[in-house]
Amino acid sequence: MSAVKKSFVSTLISKIKPQEAVLIFITMIWGGTFLAVHHAMQVSGPFFFVGLRFAAATLVLTLFSLRTLRGLTWYELKAGVFIGIAIMFGYGLQTVGLQTISSSQSAFITAMYVPMVPLLQWLVLGRFPSLMSWVGVLLAFTGLMLLAAPSSADMTLSAGEILTLIGTLGMAAEIILIGAYAGKVNIKRVTVVQLATASLASFMMMVPTGEAVPPYTSYLLYSAIGLGIASAMIQLTMNWAQRSMSPTRATVIYAGEPVWAGIVGRIAGERLPGVALLGCGLIVLGVLVSELRIRRKGKAAALVE
Image (cartoon, rainbow, N blue to C red; front, top):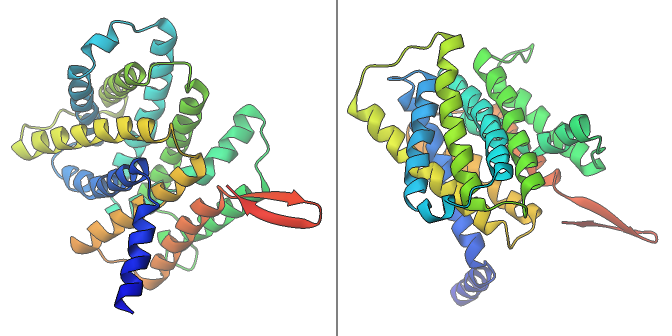
């Protein structure tokens, strides 16, 4: 029995491509960033921290892209600015939400950006979502209700949960914009511009929101630098890995991100009620289902990527 198990595990591992293995590792890191940001909100305002985080990411990536940046075009600059604004909107509201909700809740609500993509494409581009997209959205929103208010009869969302949910629109817009510009731009140059734009736009948002610059602490600085390096690594790896794998397969891997965040949160002492955990499961299921497609051949029907 032991030999059979070892054979099964080795076969499973051998089928995982290097790009997929790296993406799984990156997803684990991504999941852990939620708790780090949640703790950072004790010493900083949300938009200053997001600005500092992406400033660090921009600096790190620029150091490795100096030669490449010389060929920056106006088209790439425009693409990077649009994507960067979407990133600021998504990460900014997510970070505001992390002031009042747990990292586990934030991660699972954020995962709803995946089923949000086809809805946003419908509203903006007129592309009607597939049947499985609608099923995925229904499952994800049902899960959201269970996660957000496991002990409340009226299933109301808190301010932090609402802001995090609205922030998923920015993340969905980021995915759509990246897809629209893919193959037409240099990935490294656009990534630098989008990170720099996200940083600058976040700092600018401090003015209308009345957010003050926090006092210096080593924890704030090291958190921003660490998350900045992680952000740069995540963005580059995602762009590199998705060149050679289907969006569906990548989404299956990304669906593990809130799960990793939940595990990290659990280790750190966060606890979710049983009903909320059921909601988390429905959100992940909704993410996966939304990427399935039904292909019909005669009378037979099959689910495909």
